[in-house]
Image (tube, rainbow, N blue to C red; front, side, top):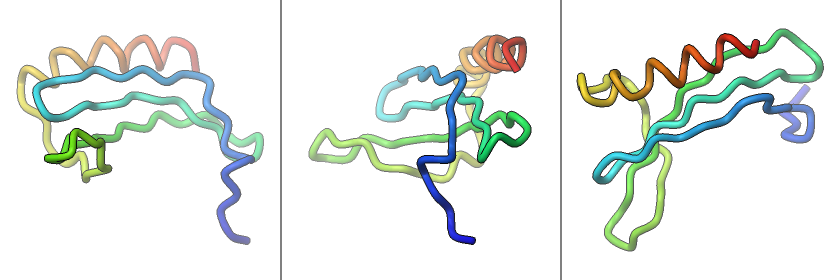
Length: 77
Protein backbone atom coordinates (compact mmCIF):
# COMPACT_ATOMS: atom_id res chain seq x y z
CA UNK A 1 0.00 0.00 0.00
CA UNK A 2 1.59 3.33 -1.02
CA UNK A 3 2.10 6.21 1.41
CA UNK A 4 -0.99 8.42 1.80
CA UNK A 5 -0.18 11.87 3.20
CA UNK A 6 -3.77 12.38 4.36
CA UNK A 7 -3.29 9.51 6.86
CA UNK A 8 -0.18 11.12 8.43
CA UNK A 9 -1.41 13.19 11.39
CA UNK A 10 0.86 15.67 13.18
CA UNK A 11 0.21 16.28 16.88
CA UNK A 12 3.31 18.48 17.42
CA UNK A 13 5.56 20.44 15.09
CA UNK A 14 8.07 23.13 16.01
CA UNK A 15 11.13 24.45 14.15
CA UNK A 16 14.29 26.24 15.19
CA UNK A 17 16.16 28.35 12.63
CA UNK A 18 19.92 28.81 12.57
CA UNK A 19 22.06 30.68 10.00
CA UNK A 20 21.28 28.80 6.78
CA UNK A 21 19.51 25.79 8.21
CA UNK A 22 16.46 24.91 10.27
CA UNK A 23 15.62 21.78 12.19
CA UNK A 24 12.05 20.67 12.77
CA UNK A 25 10.88 18.40 15.57
CA UNK A 26 7.55 16.72 14.98
CA UNK A 27 5.34 13.99 16.35
CA UNK A 28 3.40 12.03 13.75
CA UNK A 29 0.96 9.15 13.76
CA UNK A 30 0.29 7.30 10.51
CA UNK A 31 -3.16 5.78 9.98
CA UNK A 32 -3.99 5.87 13.72
CA UNK A 33 -0.78 4.05 14.65
CA UNK A 34 1.70 4.74 17.43
CA UNK A 35 3.01 8.31 17.67
CA UNK A 36 6.62 8.72 16.56
CA UNK A 37 9.16 11.51 16.93
CA UNK A 38 10.63 12.88 13.70
CA UNK A 39 13.59 15.22 13.20
CA UNK A 40 14.25 16.87 9.85
CA UNK A 41 16.64 19.46 8.46
CA UNK A 42 16.14 22.01 5.70
CA UNK A 43 18.90 24.15 4.23
CA UNK A 44 18.37 27.58 2.66
CA UNK A 45 19.64 27.78 -0.92
CA UNK A 46 20.90 30.80 -2.86
CA UNK A 47 17.33 31.76 -3.84
CA UNK A 48 16.34 31.93 -0.17
CA UNK A 49 14.23 28.75 -0.52
CA UNK A 50 14.20 25.88 1.99
CA UNK A 51 15.28 22.45 0.71
CA UNK A 52 15.10 19.14 2.58
CA UNK A 53 18.48 17.72 3.65
CA UNK A 54 19.57 14.64 5.56
CA UNK A 55 19.75 15.53 9.25
CA UNK A 56 22.70 13.29 10.07
CA UNK A 57 24.72 15.19 12.67
CA UNK A 58 24.08 18.34 14.68
CA UNK A 59 26.47 20.90 16.06
CA UNK A 60 26.56 21.44 19.81
CA UNK A 61 24.65 24.74 19.34
CA UNK A 62 21.94 22.96 17.35
CA UNK A 63 21.66 20.12 19.86
CA UNK A 64 21.34 22.53 22.80
CA UNK A 65 18.43 24.25 21.03
CA UNK A 66 16.74 21.07 19.77
CA UNK A 67 16.83 18.91 22.91
CA UNK A 68 14.27 21.11 24.75
CA UNK A 69 11.97 20.86 21.69
CA UNK A 70 12.38 17.10 21.70
CA UNK A 71 11.56 16.97 25.41
CA UNK A 72 8.44 19.07 24.84
CA UNK A 73 7.38 16.81 21.97
CA UNK A 74 7.92 13.60 23.96
CA UNK A 75 5.90 14.94 26.90
CA UNK A 76 2.91 15.31 24.58
CA UNK A 77 3.17 11.82 23.07
